[in-house]
Amino acid sequence: MPNLCRRSFLAGAAAVAANMVVPGVSHPQAPPSGPFRLAALAYPNNALEPHIDARTMELHHDRHHGAAVAGLNAALKDHGQAAQMRLEQMLLKLGELPEEIRTAVRNNGGSHANHTMFWQIMGKDGGEPDSDLKRAIDRDFGSLAKLQDRFNAAGAGVFGSGWVFLTADGDGGLAIVTKPNQDTPLMDGRRAIMGNDVWEHAYYLNYQNRRPDYLKAWWNTVNWAAVAKLRG
Image (cartoon, rainbow, N blue to C red):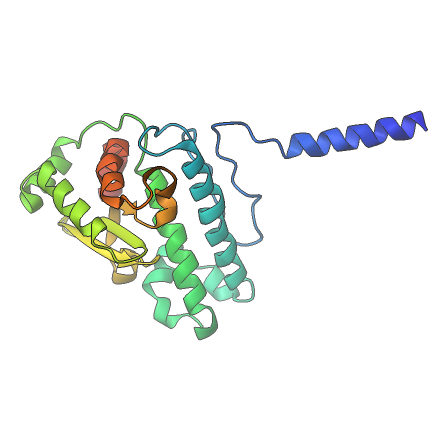
């Protein structure tokens, strides 16, 4: 009996340890069965405070993005040819996918692409645009301040849920694009080099219905080196 109790105790302790959550660190879901997975954040959940709080980051990354990855893999489970495609190619050729998975890929695949970019272009102490990116911003918008004003206005104007993006074309030209739901500029053959999520789950714990305040504060989290890298 003592040995049995000890074994039970050790098994229970192991289960508890396996499910422990370390404060401030992102804990993505276990890798789902399928070609896509949720990568861990490159920074702690609280790295972007006070502009984005740790609890929002945890829920947004682990649960919302995690659910999209699981949904994408589930949609592709019985479609091996589609599952072998790169995500960008899949979204660009959405109309060529089997009809029964098209909507699931649009929603979940778009979410995976958008959120992956979103986590990459944020960070603590993101600095300023490098000289090349700054010249492009000045050329296409007049100044960084004017880009921010137009970007914030576009994001505030998205009805319901969606995204506001800064995109680049093949010649490096920059443009502001908004998309509903989890649609992405990739569907139009454009690269999103920066984007802000204006779904309420991205900001509601701190900002409630004050989306313009969130949009303004979000610029403090932009990692300009990562934006420049995506621009190429």
